Length: 204
Image 1 (cartoon, helix red, strand yellow):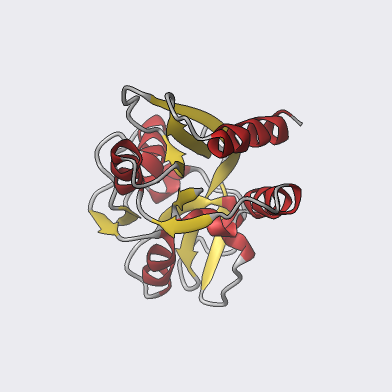
Image 2 (cartoon, rainbow, N blue to C red; image 1 turned 135 degrees about the vertical axis):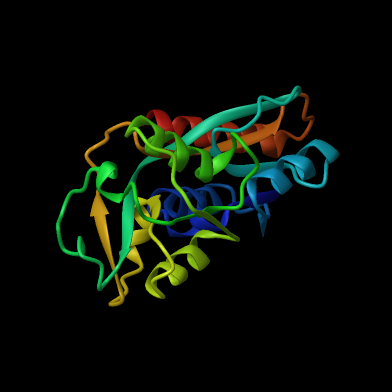
């Protein structure tokens, strides 16, 4: 199975456990994993160059593709260690309304970037200036350099760093969801089996 994934997914223990358990349960199936952004994954999926994809919603509801939720995570704020709010605990996004925001370079309405923008708009502001970054690891590195603040899935906090601080948000709707996408008309029994395996784990 040619399986695409977004880079931030690699830090999610639920996803890692899912992939490990799938490999153990299906030793005869080889998983070839490729990192791509959300848009690239969907393009490769439609062209047949990927068999399945792990993407962050929201995503466009493209004809012929099926999406199944894998895991949902709260978004947390990342601040430079010397920020005035560093160490303040839970934050309201309104407290960051005047900060430059670093977000994923996702297309409008797609992926982690849209989840971040939607959370900010619920808090009553649109971040300005916005600085687009290639991936979450780069985003966190730029935060550490004092280039701005960011929202990332809570599992990113597992990668501890001394030059940043992580903060829960007071908005329970500020979440990011990983989903498995695949072609509805796929004839690959292995892909259908992977989808069933993911659904069973998500339901459990």
